[in-house]
Length: 110
Image 1 (cartoon, one colour):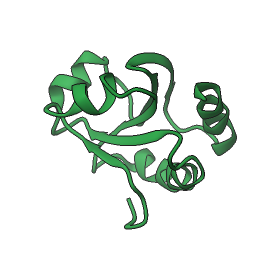
Image 2: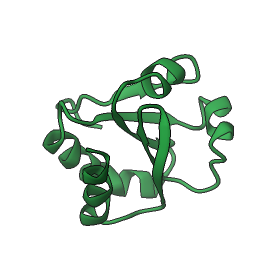
Image 3: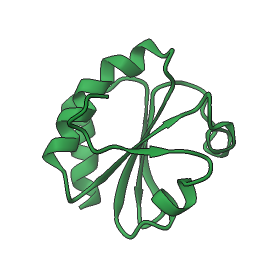
Image 4: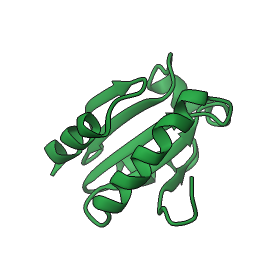
C-alpha cells in the first residue's frame, strides 16, 4: 500500500465498528503480506480508492494476523474482496479481477 492511500487497516478488534457498523459502502480486501496475487491487485485497488474517495470506504485485513475475522468470512483463497453496504455483504470477488469488474461492483454499492 502506498503512502497516498487512505485504506482503513482492519483487525479483529475494529472490524465490527469499521465495517459492520459503518453507515455506507465498504470494500474490504482480505489478503496477507506473503500473498503474491494480493500484490498484483494492489495498484488497481489504489486507483479505485482514489476515484471513490469520500463515497466508498476501503479497508484492508491481513488474514494471517486476524484469524477470527478471516474464519468468520470463510477465507479459502486470497485475495478476496468483500463488498459491504450498511454492514451487509452485498457481493464478493475471489482472486484477481480486472479494474473494470471491481469498479462495476463498487458502482452498484452507490
